[in-house]
Image: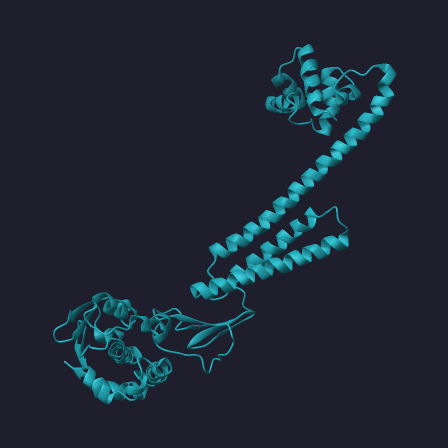
Length: 384
């Protein structure tokens, strides 16, 4: 079927009938633009319009499909040829439409999955539900795209597509958890407790500690070596204030303003805002917090912060001798001598630089011990 030849024939017969494209279009219920596309050979008229079109142009269906007037001698031969070509053309168009529908279903499903990842927060169950629905829909589209294959092969390919797509989503989700420290979308079990939320997923367990507070932090356990009983729990944001992060700010001299500022910025209480002053002559570090001390002292949070910050600063800045913690209510001063003498196991923490294991054991873990915090704070701090 030569649609360019048919288009020229339509234009020729239309002009013979002294019809404009608009007039012919009105008779057939289509636009003049559609008539123009037919005549330019861009599109073939819909099969339902072939008979009324031939009648309007005063030709037979055989003539129209042939793109020329067929003489009686070759009429039957041309008719058979046109029937076959029409069937082939129609079959081709049906397949093209079927493929287009399949592609639309495939990409519609993938679009739902993409939106589920971008619109819903990671800890929302809707994210995993809608992304899974999106993959199911795209699997249906994938099934329809393989219509030339047998049903068994199509089913197996679609199942394989679904499994691979879901596996890819789980891997992307795992990477997001590792990089951005967020809850996994695909968790087969979520347990909520007073101290944390535990997300159990195929590749890792994620512990969300101090949830919905300023000190929320995540521990991504890829080895699945932790349990709810031995997971490190601290009242602070461990990702910032933990020794694994703050040890990079270790320095010999208090005079390094940038280094000291970065250290304080990662320690507890920095979340309320602060400024620092450095007295390089007397080796004094003063931290002015933009908060009233009693305002942050629920569950002895202030005492925990001051102990933790003092030991951390004296451990990581070698020559600082005094630290002043100023609040809008009170000020607290502590000296290196007081901490070295009165803080239990301080020497173990600073043994050969910084011993991370001892730091966690004798400082971080102790912040969960109410009596230890109370007793230690009274020992080493002078309330001004």
